[in-house]
Image 1 (tube, one colour):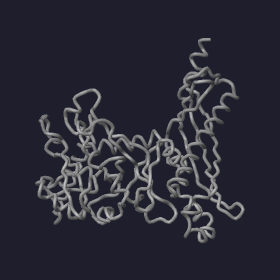
Image 2 (image 1 turned 30 degrees about the horizontal axis):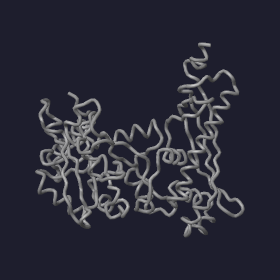
Image 3 (image 1 turned 90 degrees about the horizontal axis):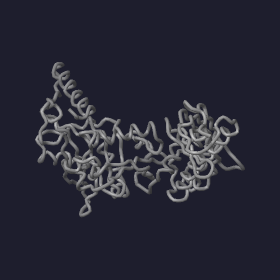
Image 4 (image 1 turned 180 degrees about the vertical axis):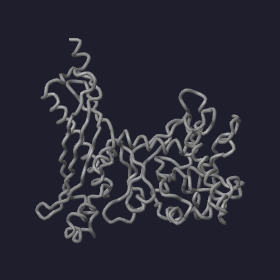
Length: 404
């Protein structure tokens, strides 16, 4: 009772796969009793040497399968050091009784200090190892170490890695300032001449020491939680800066990574209107203007009225037009602050403007690609946004207005 459904599903899947392998008589079969199922990996830099510090979050199969509650946790963290990740994975065998099984990793987290120096060498091991699948998310620990993230216990899931993975999936669908970045997308960004990669940021809120203890969960408000916090922006494989929530939301608006989200616009003196975005489409288009590349963001948005916190007559057509106009300006503003951050501070094309020029203006791209980082900082960007209100909800005017 109370155990994570997702972790149970992973465990059941492993059992089924191993049974199939055993029944097929495969020469490379491995018994579940011989494996340790890894769900999360944290990679940090050792401040006292050039070594990696690797933290592995491992499911305790006995506790997941057991119907009887014991004092043991359902996850365990192991940590060791080494000059290479390959060495670390072998060296950790001196501490664990079984071989690491990496095919069910949910997250790989890089510490901020390591990310600033570069994550390319670490990715070599991850990309080369056949046990890794490509559907896990890669994150950066903002302002701290990767091990801090993996050590925080969660009240709703038995595995912190599974919990954080699910949070990213849900937030990406119903909120806009986040996105799960898998391995293949990161690698494409690192080798691309026309688009720099970003990774999801995560940090610990609260007391990280108490958050790693079971006692920290024995209260309504946990001692510590992990929180998704904007994007980590890269140039090639090195972390160069961070986008805050608004900048991250503007980034997702530009790259068309919005499923549903909420926009809040002001109305009258101190009120606000919440808009529930139900349909979103955005395209990056490249053209030429006075011999220079011009980027146009063409965006179409449909939304419903979610909440009205002011005395506003929604039955008037001009009222709806004003809401749409204000919403267009707000979306444009979020895009602008994100582009400004990338141009002036990051000096890195994280949006893929270069890719749009490459596709749509190939002759121009041949001329500017060798100096794209400099050209990107000067490129003109315009925003063409069409915002439509489709539904008002089950009531028309605000309750305050209806009372009058």
